Length: 604
Image (tube, rainbow, N blue to C red; front, side, top):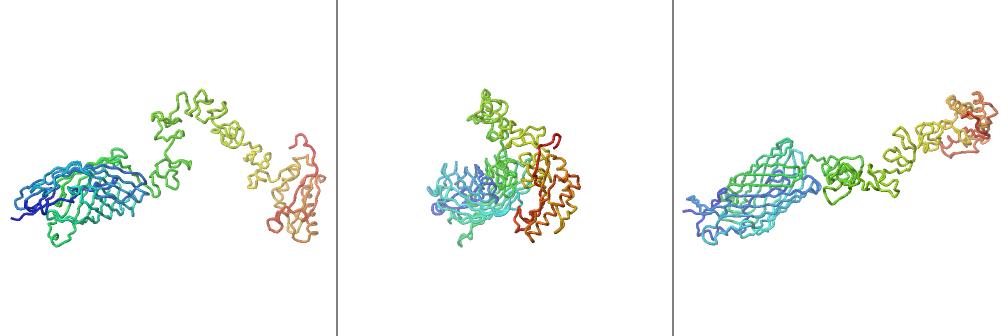
């Protein structure tokens, strides 16, 4: 009669005579549980995903993993059951993932065997007895996202696990050595479908158990989930994972494929109860007779896993505000016109306490150790500015403290013009009242040219804006105490005293000033040139040009006795004659006031 030890699906078929059990069937170093949960936050129970989304947003999960009959003895000829070596296993997996920079993910899984049941058939000591609660093999993982964003249909990544010998190697929870597995990860997401696939070799110490090789394996897995519900809060779909032992010797080559392989299928269901909490259930059979493959497996999951919305590249917190513009790039917030608050959590009432922590988010308040009062006004403080009504000069307007009792608790007036900052269109510059909200609290504009007096070089005379502060708001022709200033030049034909027609409008404006200002009794009309040419010639030319201007003004009705022509040639430059621009400024006509009386009543 042929006897051998064999596992059969989750009814492990072990053929061995009792005389052989002691020499061939030791379970030392056999980690029987073949369920390796994917890192917390992934979309499948046992198949890891390639994506990494977020930065320092942890995901935490707990899995209860129940396996029915992962190791059972049977006689291969008679089919009689020799005993349940391990009839039931219940593991708790505590699992956590920490993503970094939308690119890397660190994970850890700590398994605990909460309960194991079964017996050790055959001669005493042939197989170790099933123990009670024990620590399993701690697993650490690392993942790198290579291609694809969270919502892309195709994603690519690299990952890997390392198992450490924290489990008891005398039973069924550890093998006493370090194991490692690199993986190639594929996956993707569409509007209603998620999928993942993974493959890689698991390097582990080679051993033979009951004539079955158990060493280095090729691990593969794949799963697909269908997103249901209006908010896609439900996920349903199958996943499968398998491990195929690499045969290392001629004897192992003859091992039955089913006894040296693990293949399981789960039907998964997940429900996102709230945005950050998921519940899940997976059930399914084992399909081969490999060591540790159960007849049935059930997995129950509860997880804290923050919901990941579609994340734009360069937007770590996924709030739709790019990191370069986000004042709080690692905390989802709201848009704000204030760059210092843009992308930060909101504070509607502006009391410095974020809405999420503020028990009174629409009324300014003060800090409190009591969450029910945190951010709420104090009793007797109607406006919630922290100043009690009895001391508050403005008890219905929330503002800041002030040493002046008449202003304590009142809105500020930074420029001291008597117009509160909240109503002041120019809160940092003293101004005057105005019915126009855009001008209320701004400096006056006496001449009504749209340029405030504090910036108007000619506040009493309307004129256009000019980048030169000395000309800003001044008309083309205006009067000072000593001069009739012209902002344009009187133009002459080259080397002539003939006035060009383009200057007629300018001289009309000069004549109007003489008529409006009768107090100006005598003006020296000065002619000036640059330094090119003969000085004597230049002086004569400037005299003729000054005389031509006097004649033009007399022609316009100005009494000649109020005008004196004087040519200075190149004697009085006002700019550098070494440049074209400087010489252009030096070629000019000026109207210097030399006699002036008091203004005549009724005159401007």
